[in-house]
Structures are given as C-alpha cells and as structure tokens.
Length: 302
Ligand code: NAI
Image (tube, rainbow, N blue to C red; front, side, top):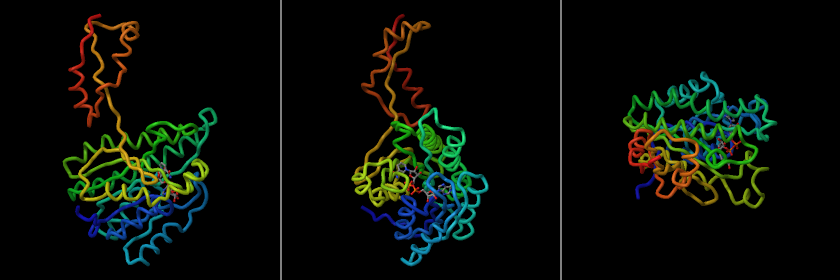
C-alpha cells in the first residue's frame, strides 16, 4: 500500500470553517496539501453575519506546520466560486482538489417549505457545487489532473422526512457528478460523491444523542482523503462514510422488457413484475452504456 500523500497538491475545501470540512482541511494539510479554507461563516440555516471560522482553521493548520489560506466567499454565487478558485491560483498557482462541502439546512415538511427555504438550500448545495467546480475544472483540465468531491447525502439518495429541499439539492449534486465524471475522464479528473454521516451542528438535533457521540467527523475524513488522492482511480462512485462504516451506493437498472407492439397501460399492468423486478439489475456508468443494454431486453408479444 502506498502512503496517501498530498505534498505538492493544492486543495480547496468549501465550508471548511467547521464540521466535516474543517477536519478534511486539517487532515489534507497534515498530509502535505496546500489548502484554501473557504467558509463564509454564518448560522446553520445560512443566515447571520460571517464569522472568523476560516481564519481559525488556517491558524490551526499553520500552527501544526501546514500551509493554508482563508477565503470568505459565498459558494452560491458565480463571483464567489471564481474568487475561491482565484484564491488558490494566486496563493499556490493551481487547483488539484476540490471538496464541495459547504452546506446549510432548512428542514420543513413539504407544505411548509416556503420558496425562500427551498431556494436557499438548493443554492448552497447545488449551485454552490457548480459555481466553485466550474472555474476549478478549467485549471484541472489545463493541468491534466483533478480530484473533485461532491458531498451528497443519504437524504437525497434514499429519502429523509422533512428534507425535500435538501434531498433534491443533494441528489442534484450527485447528478452533477454523474455527468462531470464523463467530461473529466480524458483529463484525469475523477469526480466522486461522498455521503457522510457525522455529529456536527448540522445533525445535532437530527441524530439520536448516542449516534451523535459515536459519529465523530474523523470517521468520515479517511473516505474524503482517499477519494481525493492520486491513488484513487475510481470515478463516479458514491461512498457512504460514518461512524467507522463505509459502503457504496449506486443506481441500478434491470433489464426490463420490450413490447413488440405499441403497449397499453393494461400491458404494463399485466407485466409489472417483469418491468420492475430488480433481479440481475446492473449499474451503468453512462446513458450510452445503458441504452446498449436495453436492446437485450426480452420481447413481449402483445
Ligand atoms: P456544518 O454546518 O458543521 O458545516 C458546514 C459549513 O459550511 C459551515 O461552516 C458553514 O459556515 C459553511 N457554509 C454554509 N454555507 C456556505 C456558503 N454559502 N459558502 C461557504 N461556506 C458555507 O455541517 P457538516 O455537518 O460539517 O456538513 C458538511 C457537508 O456534509 C454539508 O454539505 C452537509 O450537507 C453534508 N452532510 C453532512 C451530514 C452529517 O451527518 N453531518 C450528512 C449528510 C451530508
């Protein structure tokens, strides 16, 4: 096993003033990366004045002998994303790693989900991933190297009561990764998806107290660091990480059926089990591969 080492690498970690992002930034720096510690400060729901969180993390990294610069831009704005990447280019000349981690939470059941709470959550998680990754991708493409993490959530992949805005945003970030992994492939840019579970301010009233205690952020960071490493050749993979448990989730599709003639809704009703039975279902890395497989579906004479 080769040691995972980030000497010579430049990393951007968004929302790195607290929680998972902070630990990721600290550990990347401990292993030699030069880190842009982005965080605009503010409360869990994204409101409030900016705090000095990014500065404190930079001080901590420097005190331990590492290299880091702070950035206070909002990931959800185009100029914010550009400025975060500019901070890396000005300080260290390139970007090798982007960990899209910044996040807010505004949970409400669907009928109480007012537009401002919908928009704010989609903006930080989904638009934020776009705004930061796009200028970074340009530099990675020019350098022929990149590692990008989209922080998603089980709330999107499986569903979680009261989080329609968050689940939609997090699934959107996974969809962004599904496509970007294809566009980055020939430039050695790997794009992977992290589904963390950790006791942070984001989960303090969502997780049961014993689970919160057990789920230290340090249990998630090994997954983030591995996915950011040169050694990681995977792309487009969703990794669940929390409390010492690691697993992979993916979207699978079965072979289904093909009707010989124009089907009626009753034809679907009559063949529902064949259409929906997941036996033999497979993961497809792109639409193109899935379309080819479709041609093999058994034909139903109707
Ligand atoms: P946290 O609340 O401790 O940290 C999030 C950080 O993002 C905060 O420091 C905040 O100031 C920063 N931030 C918020 N909006 C920002 C913006 N517009 N621009 C820049 N920075 C901004 O939360 P935690 O738990 O560390 O979450 C990190 C990521 O992991 C989030 O994307 C979250 O949705 C995701 N996640 C966390 C889970 C958990 O169990 N803690 C579960 C699933 C996903």
